[in-house]
Length: 329
Image (cartoon, rainbow, N blue to C red):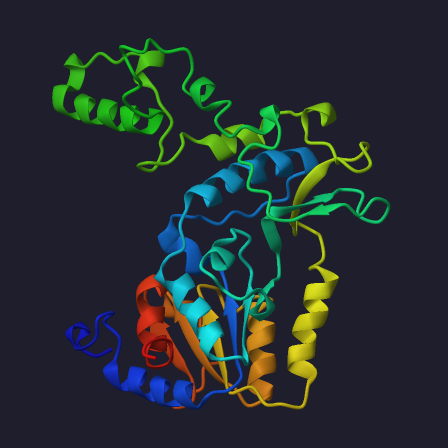
């Protein structure tokens, strides 16, 4: 890779220039977007095979985190690209609503996995209730993500807050034993010694704690239409199919007679569906592929001299890559 001083993001300037030449000529562009787009907004990704009640609990936590996050420069860059290139469509796997909040036109954004802030009745076939743009942080008291934060720390004297995790205490004990030898006397850590490990400025192990909690059906939000079934986020849970209408709209983009000039895969592995499938479909319609990710290891089937791999944070890399189109009058 070229000297990072040559570009603001450390990319190879020759590769960037080559990409810019293709971008400026492209009329039909598709982007396959993953969690890496929102990484700079402070949002993490989660996978699991949890049941209905645990999913409700978990996604309540994710709603709160998404509400507190802000779109980053990559979201705004894609939104501006959509406004300036009518033939651009983004297929996002994210459910955090950050792309719509950045002003991405709705008809040029396909939310493959749904949206945390669209709710639906769990009896989709019988009732069919759907509510969009529900930004209420807590849908039911039992789903308050802050409910167990205090309990997660145990019963601790507020004047003697937890200072370390069991892992850290064990390491300290080993070091003391090495230094003091036979003179070292160990002891079991007390409650006031212990605390769960957590990243700075993040809730204390709330996801794990809440995923293990039990919730009764009556504790969950009820559908206001049928008053029988549970109201849930309109997102794709483990084992569920992608929304039929989104799949049909996406397929239509690939099935028409027009070629695709450029395909961007952003913040997602190009080894798994849908990134791998959609990128390959675009390639068959003539598209050149540009991968934007924090590692080059996820890039697959890249053709030297035809495709590009740009390594870095999407929030930094994407505005630079799209600059010729998204800036100016």
